[in-house]
Amino acid sequence: WSQSSDKYDAHAQGRKWRSFRPGAYNIESIFHLATQAGWLNPLASGALLEQAIAAAPVAEAVEDESDDGPTQAVMPSELLNPPGILADIMAHILATAQRPQPALAVTAALALAGTALGRKVATETGLRSNLYLVGVAGTSVGKEHARNVVKNILAEARLSEFIGGEDIGSGQGLISRVAVSPNVLFQSDEFGLFMQDVQNPKAGSHRASILTNFIKLFSSAGTVYHGTEYANQKDRPRQDIEYPCVHLHATTTPETLFDALGSAHVTSGY
Image (tube, rainbow, N blue to C red):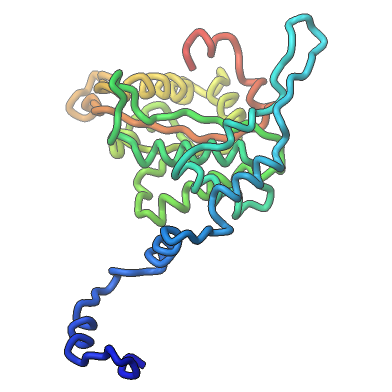
């Protein structure tokens, strides 16, 4: 086919073929060049987000029975329209969901981005990307889908070491996991039931300390976390963790979450 052209040059053709390198161009390159030339991808994140936001309930002020004024019914739509790669992640979650949930999708996108940036960036005041995020939704609405997408993306990116266990046995178990991987994402289902469990007086101090350690790790992201001192220092040395970046991405139903919350959680900072 090349030889049918008047511009064919056998020497130049051989040189051109020898210049090709595996992986230099791939399907992503073609899409990128096409986009630069003005092509619009009909499956682009912007279009998917617009569809999802259009289908989502519009935030309205709903009068309650008290005299305290209006209350917010649902999430404002502008919070469901993140920029950049967050929009791409959110669009992928929505496009692959049987029951798209924009609020849960943006929460998952934030959790994933925070984990990817963990211990790499900080603000001028020392804030890190460690986020504690809990999506609250009813039963049978597909709460697990967004968490699964986050897990799959990290696995495909060969970042599975950043994925923590879906259940935490004790406060010290939490610290030991963070000591191994200071940048770690814990994803949890039925977080309200988890809170009820660890607050149960019969659960034991090893379970109750999970909440306490989550608070300590959150506030230690910009410094060094100094672990518990044990009497037998030889067998159980203190675990010190430099700049722990712990992320929490959980879902729960409103009934189990609010039953587990009390004023003590507000005063403790949790």
